[in-house]
Amino acid sequence: MDTVFHLISQYGHLAVFCLLVLGIVGLPVPDETLLTFSGYLVYRGQFHFLPTVLTAYAGSICGITISYTIGRTGGLYLIHKYGPYVHFTQERLVRVHNWFERMGRWALFFGYFMPGIRHFTAIVAGSSELEPHVFALFAYSGGLVWVTSFVSLGYFLGEQWSRITDEVNGVLLWITVAVLAVGVLVWWLRARKRRAA
Image 1 (cartoon, rainbow, N blue to C red):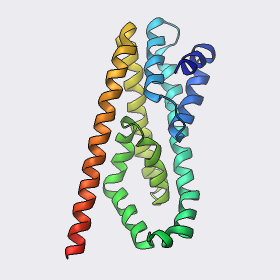
Image 2: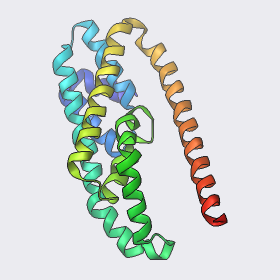
Image 3: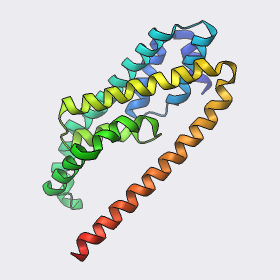
Image 4: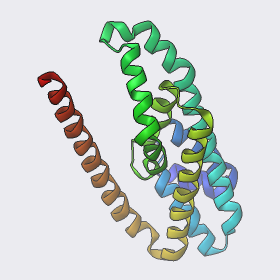
């Protein structure tokens, strides 16, 4: 964490951009804390609000696009090559794609707010061959809301940013666990219903 603060303090917006790219792709970067700290620097007058939001937004959409591209290329290759060994057929791939068409696009939008989820939504979207324009619409708009929310949070909290950020991260973690639990339950009930039919 101290390394992140040091990099941002020393290299400014360049560090914000690079760290967010790496964090969205999946490296262990504390994205929300990074954004909130950047907002705090806006509060201190070391950063300006609009350039900070735009830089962070550019980093987030670059990272999510890289993840989507990985899924679209490497993910599909692995599915076609090894899918049959784990019973992941073309029919199931089509089912995932159809789910993304109906509901998964919202996972791209809201996934930013769920630690651990945003790293995978774009890869799954790419692997399921979700159309690039649909991916961009939901992923990029979600990224803008996410970035603006946390930079604003750091700005308005001021000197209290560190204490409140820990609480916010805890709440987001519990929401993520709850969403995953509901998702697993729904999947299990549907699988059970299909087996009974």
